Image 1 (cartoon, rainbow, N blue to C red):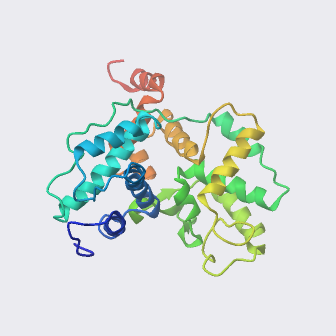
Image 2 (tube, rainbow, N blue to C red):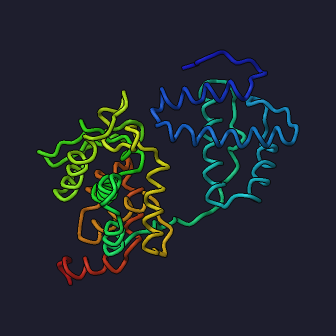
Image 3 (cartoon, helix red, strand yellow):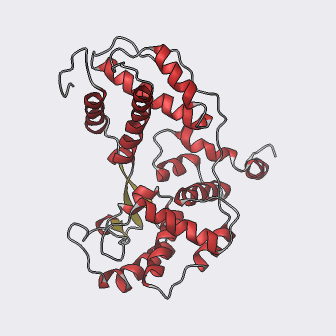
Length: 307
């Protein structure tokens, strides 16, 4: 599917606009994912501009790409290099797909060898301390407690949390509807405890807000009655960690990791965790298998018939 007609003098700006349309319409990626892919290409464009290269998307060679990656390696770590290389491969594969190029200049360029990064996790005691540190005397306190409990209780990504709607809550059935990557929907169980804190926020705090047009169905709102940003959720988590002197570098995603890890440690089936997290591939979920090997040994000892 072509969105415009390019000549051999294709400009980077035009190619990037077209590529973003492709990522959205044909691959169904979220705005956050599209932005990340866009930034990978922008880094290459800036390198070309800074070094007065005149290469277009159609003429850039492997040699120039290698020079870019060489310079990149001086300022970013191996994991970031690997992600950027992957993003650029995707961009040039798109050009091949649309018959604008016959080759991918990154074809023979390998990503740095990196080990699988194990996710940071919080203990149940850590999570209790974080929630206990929330100041419930403020209007935002009840909201923040509901946010933390939802992140941990349902294993949501931060973007899934901020986009959660009142109409996504099916408390009578014990589920919430979550819109994940690529606008894919899934139903996630929600505990009575998490329901309780959301209901307190809804009935005692949210109903008193001056909700702005277009945000009537959004669950978690800022004090101006608009949807919370991802950055605000990060700030809430960081401030709570500082308040209790937590010696871990945590983010909203840490609660998602903890959700999966604690489920696995308590005997949950990996495929069930995969469904709740919304992972397309169970390989992604399998990273949690590496978090606590001692737990797996206990499972064998307890359940294997030849114990």
